[in-house]
Length: 272
Image 1 (cartoon, rainbow, N blue to C red):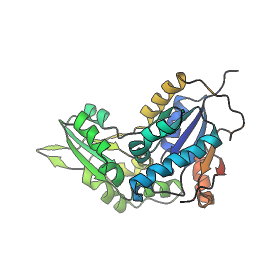
Image 2: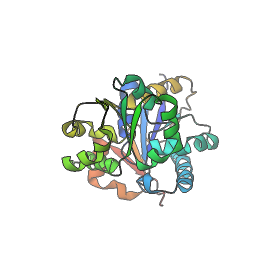
Image 3: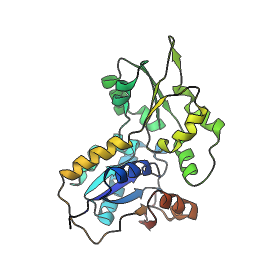
Image 4: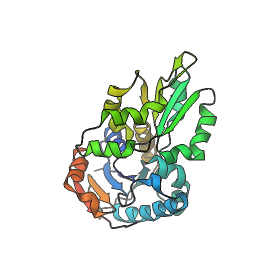
């Protein structure tokens, strides 16, 4: 029987589950292991140099535990600041996540694009470079939403989304300019697609949401095709979530992971 590729999906919290969902659809034959650095969540509050050190250390432990063939960094913050360091530190193939500004610029009809991201992603030069390279001809409304990721996690744990709070969080990317209005919004954090249905209820007008997960899944499938599988057998089974703190093992959290295809959990204690 052919070996099944083992894919490690990493995020600071639950946002990468949107990527895991896309991967399971793209590669149903793959074994998926999810890892959340919940001990350090949210990453937006961290000093950049300290966070890079943290991410490289955490991925080292996760690679030892999960023995993956490929690692998907399903986190915009981690990808934009630490992907180069991860590739330098480990031989494992890494697939990163970046704001989908290029496809947004290709799809817009009005030339007015919104980018919802974390405050950290908004402030980074990498994001501004993407805009200058691919959306220089567009009006780009870049907004660092401080609470959206936590709202998405609360929703996944079964809590209702406050429509007024959500409307306030996303309002800055809905603007009209010279008779034209935002028609495409980039979801620049993997948490945000969890809120698409809720956002559609509070938007002032309809827009196209750009979810990066399907493109990440396609890229991962290409990388797997080019990768020699290690055939590891002494690793957690597919459907396991690895947490960096036991505080993430509350029943509502584990129920949320189970609902997204990860019914088992392991704690690798990596305190902040």
